[in-house]
Image 1 (cartoon, rainbow, N blue to C red):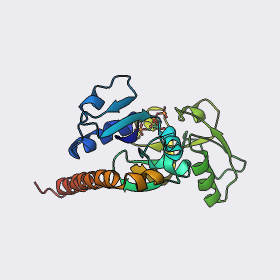
Image 2 (image 1 turned 180 degrees about the vertical axis):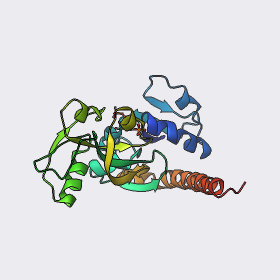
Image 3 (image 1 turned 90 degrees about the vertical axis):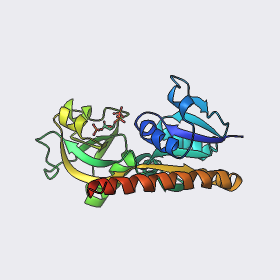
Image 4 (image 1 turned 60 degrees about the vertical axis):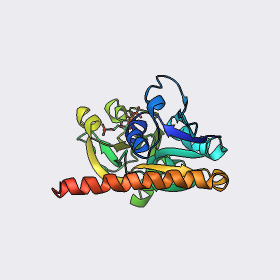
Amino acid sequence: MPLKIALTKGRVERQVLPLLEAAGIDCSLLKQKNRKLIINTSDGNFQFILAKGPDVTTYLNAGAVDVGIVGSDILTEQRNQQAELLDLQVGCCQFVLASTNNFNLNQPGRKVIGTKYPLITQRYFETLGRDVEIIKIEGSVELAPLIGLADAIVDITETGSTLRENNLYVYDYLDLVSTRLVANRMSLKQHAAEIFTLVDQLAEVVQLTTDQRQNQGSGVK
Ligand code: PRP
């Protein structure tokens, strides 16, 4: 039986693939998957299931997969109950409070905030002692203040391009986000050896990548 791994489609998938390859996993079929959603590795050891981030936690909680690879933004928002085993240190981004240049949080009145992350947003404004109305948005959150749906947004930003290209400004920085490897707790008991081998291999790759980055930063060749 292959180890079932739910991998978040898109940005996470692209950034995690090189790590999986460096850990010795044959990703050739995964790379040529086109619209296929379930891909087995050629050695039969792993089965990758391509899913949207929030569904990765759903599959993990239901025991439909053994392992999930997903952003910490989603794990926090979904109140992850499974075993978080490794920070893969890719997919790094940050939560921000952003809006148009005329936004002023300190003006009186209950602000309307658009976000894909209502729980994280609620918690953030609670720490500020502010009561806000939260509107859940599924994607392209940046539109909300531009079309008059919300006063501001709480969203993740990586390069900052989406904010810049839509004339939005950062008003506060919240938590950092990165991609994590999570295991279903029952799978962790049943497939402990396979899961910990995978974690060890990936941890080594992550450490190596971090060392290389640091060496480049310090000019060591
Ligand atoms: C995320 C996020 C921003 C964008 C930020 O959206 O919600 O919209 O990335 O990235 P940047 O700072 O590099 O521009 P995603 O690409 O996941 O798509 P979505 O808006 O459809 O959810």
